[in-house]
Image (cartoon, rainbow, N blue to C red; front, side, top):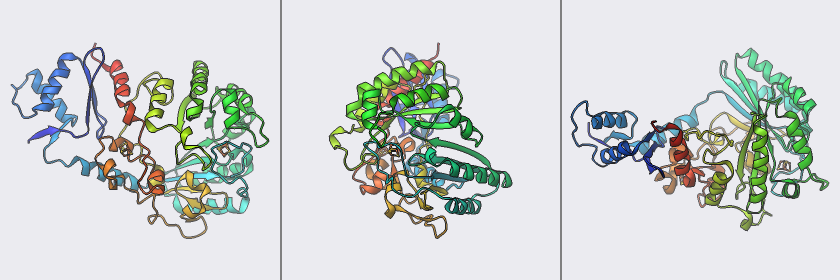
Length: 435
Ligand code: SF4
Ligand code: SF4
């Protein structure tokens, strides 16, 4: 069998010595000392050269072939990437619901795209939603719910009603149930966390946009008052009681320094509260509202640099250990079947960004649904020549489908790894180099 190097290999020399080899199609990685790195270069350049059996060269060549850094000449790797992504898009593993129980909000964030005047979800719509879930949830699968808004904690009675009904449904159908809440955090007090725990809700995401002055300017109450002090007080009170609290910091050009100070403060809290995670959100054209000055937005490369500077080479979460990127994990859930965003009136969407755009609805919980015939499920990143030729396609999957769809392919939301992969792999290699 004739071998050639995989087109999805990434090989980076390390600053001190040695190198790291990574394959974006398989997720395989090797940290190599100097001598092994030289042998890898030689084998990748001349994979067909013969070596004595049992020699170190032959053993290394066998490993490179086993881990698919060397692949058969006949293998169409691009085709394999497309086939595996499509299979994942079509896979119906269960039901995934993002439920916006209200679009009302007690905040007025400068970049918010939602219409807060829409009526909250009422009991009749919630009952219809339970029927919809019962029809769509196959036995012995799983139901994953994201509680969303507006601010979901402005409509707790409906969350209680739905949680009870959905958990009962999962019991009847022997399905696993898991959920997560995205909240602005203002009402996430210790008593509220205990009330939500009885509903099975103990994973949260809240957003802070920097230290007090910047955060209060970007995320004030509807009446204009600041929210930073209340959010920090709530975080301190609940961080040890929940199983996950992810703090997202939306990054734009004007809040980088303030975000860096906030990251320092949150990292200090992590020692006492391991459930606290930190992530940075890239405010781009898909998430900024039309009033946001384009000059205020960071480019993908700038955002990636900030991510490394603020969170370290390990990337998201602010964790100490660098994780390898995982291929095929990032297929956008909007592009998958059996994933719905439910508006307060029961209208169905595919993408969270669509909640402010009625024309994006794909149906209603009580009416017909365009399951296949919608732009998100039909999104194929390889239709874009730049994505098709991109070595990061298996771990990026073309980025945000919504950006592609809305700009007709004129813009892409490239993974920050496009700019930070060498640092991420170097950090991983540091922990994995042979002693
Ligand atoms: S908290 Fe969320 S829903 Fe409320 S104004 Fe801010 S971005 Fe919009
Ligand atoms: S969006 Fe960018 S990084 Fe992602 S596959 Fe396309 S070109 Fe590559």
